[in-house]
Length: 300
Length: 183
Image 1: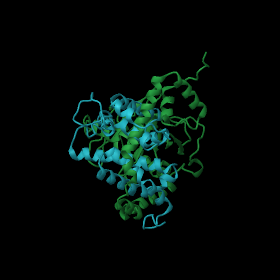
Image 2: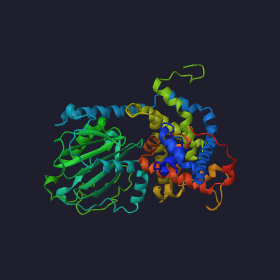
Image 3: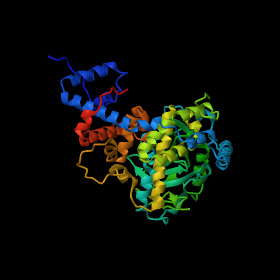
Image 4: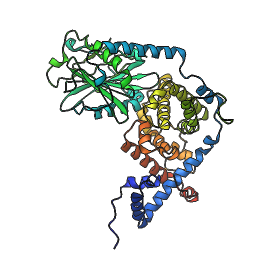
């Protein structure tokens, strides 16, 4: 009789092959016991390790090469060109000024802590943000082929411009929309010249701290949400905390151009829809999910 | 700095970044398959990283942070190149098909005797994941963060990549390899 075997998942075997179980001796021992009676599996692990060794050997010479002077010189210089630095400083200064003028934004509500209240469906938003960061270029390229162009239909009472984040160096890259049982959401994907992405989401009201942004961290990115004009607004990005006041002000300005329409007065579940807007580089920003019956975002 | 260090005195942050240059160059070389392109990519990454050191101070490992920046730059460079070339090719499709690779003009069914050839046959998303884990030895969660994907997706990509390599590499190549314990 053999002792009762611990359940071994194929990922355990891969972690073992990668040497990632060294800090978990019990698990490592269980995997080795599992392999004892399975020569084919053991051979597979051996092959994985051999492949890894081959890959390392193939590129070892790069580690041994002296780094080109241009790389060390790049480090020696200040990496921030004067013009760029000035723009950033101006953007930061602007955000600080705007912060002072935004009602409801207080230090007490601004920080990386959970409030224990039901917030927006941040996990799916963060997932969408990760997708946009990772494959944004592809989606833009793909969706550009199916874009309906800049002339979008719109319901006048719902039309609003996409919040303008150009002062932070971000431009609108694309829009999308999705819905679940409780809400329909508009997602706005922005990116700056360095490739940093932030995702801004507008959805039907859900209970939050009234008007005051709540900032949390999830899956390596920050997310903040607040309510404005009856909408819940969510923004996801790596440095949301720093740019939040400016983003909040931009959203507020955009919402003020709703021509008196209050999104909160729309029927529950009414689509928030995504319209499109030309990007700063002239590429047509697409509406990949195309629920275009009632666009909230209008072309400027 | 010591006698072997850069001639210019670097701040502590810059020194920490400088230590990662060889690893950045190695990953960039594997991603781009071209030494000059790779160094361009690393240089661009360094310049941008210096602008954003505050981001790193908030987010842990400097290596993972730099690799994240490098990978994003790699994707952005591809996007720019695609725009200039006016190609209608979709990046997602390219990532999945391995079309970004300098694919050898041979049939997929052949056995590969060279590890670079074998890597080039992998879909780009699998290749970039495998290289982070096996070549750069990043933790699974760090590698997932670099690629901007969930850890489960990362592990799935790595798993599929190495199984594909195992299936297509010459058994003699595997048998001949010295067995060394992986860290």
